[in-house]
Length: 301
Image (tube, rainbow, N blue to C red; front, side):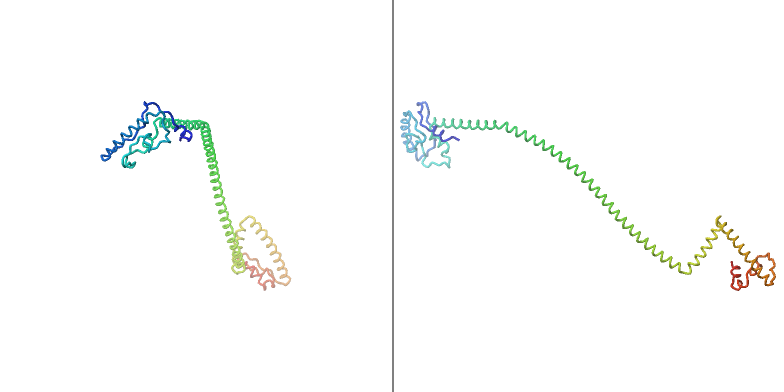
């Protein structure tokens, strides 16, 4: 944009060149047939005024241009001018009020102002190039650093995921071990309860069996069987021989006492008997022992 001081400088009155410089371009509207004669008269008047204006040595300032003073500006208006219908182009119409030298200076000033603005922007951009380079390098370094940090964090996350998986595996194993221990403790407790219950039942059954008559029969029968089996062993044989000898000696001593009593009473000694079936053992017992049933017990044995 043109500043106010530059615009004031451009619009100052300057000496117009000689007749070699042309007048500013004017719009050339096409008049209708009705206004041909008035336009012709207006053209003659304008040509006279134009000759008078060319004789001037200085151009008037664009600010002093008055459309009503035809001595300064040559303008031909149609009867009903309209910008909407294309009779005039607004830009060219407004530029026609500015003298050609001023318009050239304005254009050159605008061009210089645009060039200076562009140079200023280019200089500003050039001055910002190092800053932008440093900023770009910082962004690149920050990106590299961010990638390294991302890789480090990804590795750390992978390690944490591995540790978490191991912890979950250990927790799962410990949970399974705890469940197995609880099941084992429950089974052990149940087994102990059943064993204790069975033991109590067996104790009651043993006590009931021991108090029953069947226990005595079973014990005696088993004792006879056990004695028979034990008598077949070397220890049993030795014990039986020893006990037999002791019993034989005891029986012989008792028989001698019985025979002595019978002799004192005047009784005769029994006759020897070689047949075991005909042997009468009652002769070896006294009358008291025979009455008590000792002979029957001995014979039964």
